[in-house]
Image (cartoon, rainbow, N blue to C red; front, side):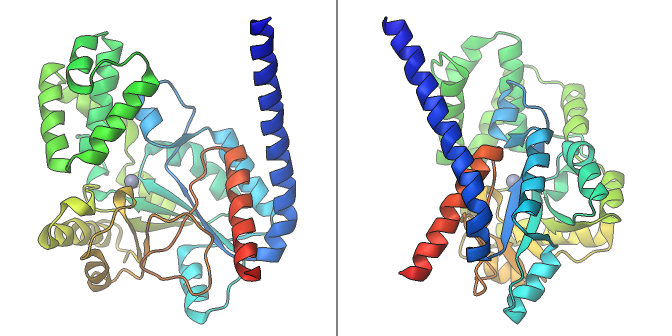
Length: 340
Ligand SMILES: [Zn+2]
């Protein structure tokens, strides 16, 4: 009987969730016209998720959900615009209902799984590129950590995993301990951790190179996209968290990425996105000095016409239903704010 009750309860809660999602998706069709504000959407990877730590830690969305979100945005009456359009609208204080599609980091699946669709529908998009990854044979420090953990799991070396992350019964618990380690330590400590784990699992240069070639965009793929609607922007040279950096290091991290874009793509990046959504006291002046006009910060919100250009909010959808719920909540908040 208890078994049946449990199944019934989960059936009812699933039904409730589906009903809420359905109500939200319908409600948004009305609320969007009342609110009439622009949005920036942020994505990381567009690919079929696997069970790997790498996929779980770096936001991944399957291509069909991405397509569904794009179609829904059109239905809500947004105009797909570029970050340049957003700048014009914010400086003239004339807000058209824009939706700006952005991606972070620079993964190959953008080229194969999202770009063909965006190109076909003539949708402009922006990429906040981690410039050191282009054509790189090395993995970025954090990606290397995830790759090592996946290798340990594949090879069944649970003792190594326990040594660094404590006893973990399942993937969820492991992801939580990794998140806590990444959040509570400075990147130099994590670099040391990655170095010692790499030695322990005997990660070879060939293996690392193969993985880097598999996941990062190449210069020619980037050039192809730049010729077809991509605005190239910066996300730091090494994706370092700014709260760990001195003024000089912040300067190096931002300016090197800007110089890289200028040198390799003959473009002047106008936007910067804070890695891990973490800022420091130096980034605004340094960004300004480097010719950056706007910065994506860490807030989740719609764009208001008086939005502060060095801390622009963004919405990062996980899947279609959560996106509908997220948007619905933001619309209601915006309406309540106006009434209040
Ligand atoms: Zn990032």
